[in-house]
Length: 449
Ligand SMILES: Cc1ncc(COP(=O)(O)O)c(C=O)c1O
Image (tube, rainbow, N blue to C red; front, side):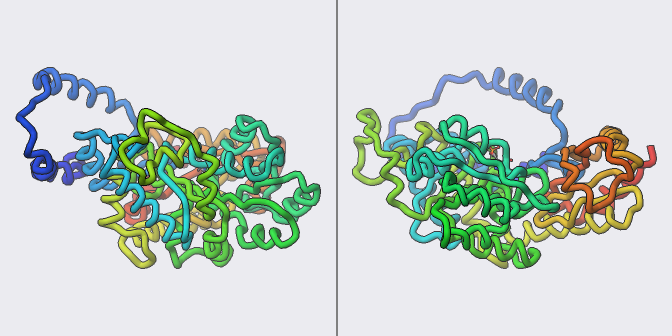
């Protein structure tokens, strides 16, 4: 695979640029002053610098949560960049604001969240920040609770918002322990519970259905952080617990999903959705410089960020047009392949005496310890294996898990530490399914080194 092949969609750009130009035919001729030779040499120098990256685009990269954008997203982004619209206000991003509203409505439909209020933003951190901020406005002074495996952003954002943070214990599979949550709710101090559908480290799915059921006895908002896992709502091949959790996602008060994770988008594309459109009142502000061109909704009126790339909306809109996020569609089939890849990696590791997968993956992240006499030795072996694999161009990740999440897999005889550094693979490319034999062969060689 070469970048030339990946760039196929760029070959259509010349034709698309001409089509775009036709929209501005009435204008007198104008060419910006640029030095074509300097552009070429600078771009070649840029390519040289970019070679210093790991091969994130290739199936032998199965480490962190990185997924190549779809070619249509890259090309649509580049096309929109010729105008560089700003989705803050309609005046600066007329077409792309409409595209954003359509794309966001499509995501809300996928979750059964109708009506809704939502918009795109810089990413999962910003999207969660807005949801937690609205939660604070509705339950002033009350704490935010999230599981011990939730993304670190939730405790950090709680500090930024000036509200207490409550860490809720997890079970052996890294899911929120509902009994622990129940006793924390007893104090009445918690105003928002963050339910993670797809934790960052292990892809664990918190039992949303059971958390929602607690609302009959306690008053709290439910915020779903599905930054990584949200699109798995489309799949039919999840385990029963994950299916139950995703099945009621539309009952949450707010949801975060990152199209720049599993939604095939370039970075800079998060999305926050609210079930109650009237929360828009918390965003209310005036902007004498920008909200002059229309009485229709300017996206800046319902988001905390001001300037935002209209190109992100164009890329997401184009991708959803070509690959609608519907059950049984081509987009869902791509995700299903990721999950199949994760399951086949899990099965192979489970059958290998050298490794101890912590649990069966709920989505497409697999985590495993290296069997050893002690916890420290296991961590050391994992680090060595990570490096040896990298030497064979197999790119994995490392993640540390507490003893309580490792014990069931019995990776060690002696616990001389309270945690183990494990190997972690995010099988986020559909191609990982076909590449699994090659990945396993390289892992085997790295383990023999
Ligand atoms: C569950 C979850 N929430 C939030 C985030 C933060 O998102 P971002 O990196 O887009 O700011 C991540 C990132 O991996 C995540 O996995």
